[in-house]
Figure 1 (cartoon, rainbow, N blue to C red):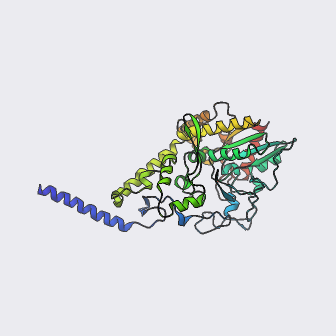
Figure 2: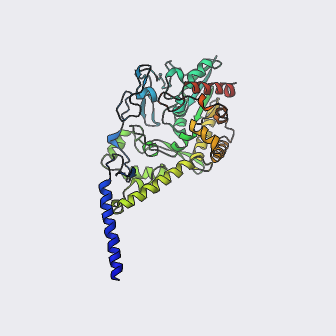
Figure 3: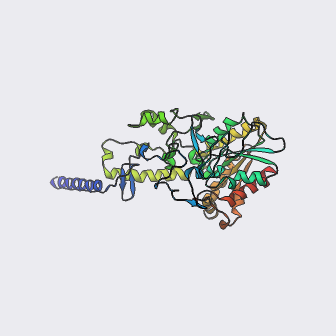
Length: 415
């Protein structure tokens, strides 16, 4: 018995020493408890209010990844790359109307479309009016106004008036909601919705972009709208806060139960064990390290599973697209879903058989029930990798690829 007691005491003493040493080795981190051996430790900060990059388009600090980007002698701003946003109670955020960035890379018109021309509610009888919706790829982020997909559609298309309503950071839910704000105000012939699975699927099961994507801005920490499927039907879930000021006011000192309950229910990237504190146990570094390993595993599995046909992400996205298709047809227009792979997707499609099958199964699921789809994976797969270019910050597609996308749409969707 004495030996057993001594053994237990020795183990306990060793653990205490180990805990003390580990606590001393922790490096401060504004986004979590701290960093140990390059491992982030819980709890993860839910609202990093002191670290937020402001919404102003010219904000540039050394912490911004685009700091120091110069093109043709011009110092490029956040707004040039992303566009200028404003808060919106219905959409979470949207493009600011009648705005122009420092270097005029991005400009919006009277209705918030990426255009330097006024848009009237009525359309020309001599042109096909196309409304484009989607995320940053649809918006053609990271390139100037004259190198966007809609620019090329307008200049090489057969009598086309393409209006770009893509918004950086959107998923399918916000794209559909934005369409709803225009469908009764604008005459149109066709709606093109850009679907980028790599980005959109995760966003359609996420309401707090900072949690899912680690984005730091006044818009990404706000709670965004999303859809769930309830009793087989789409149900819109709005933010419990009218605006960002209300959210901050309610959660400045500590995260409220209202916010926790909303994130637990509607954000797949919110893990209670990671974002909330467990009394007593969370004082132990070994417990924190274990939680970190579990969290990284769960998040990786979630990201890998979103493309599965039976995943919540695919099922919700499928419903959103089907509903948008029906709304467009009710308005007398035609609907086209453009499925756009990223450059990374092209590589995975070529060299990872499991990814290729998953992509095809996902497309088959999404494009059922009469949805007209234009899957650019096969078109892009015939093009050498070196033919693709990127935006000026090395993310998204560049002008050559944007032009190619427009040409494919003209050849396969408009003729």
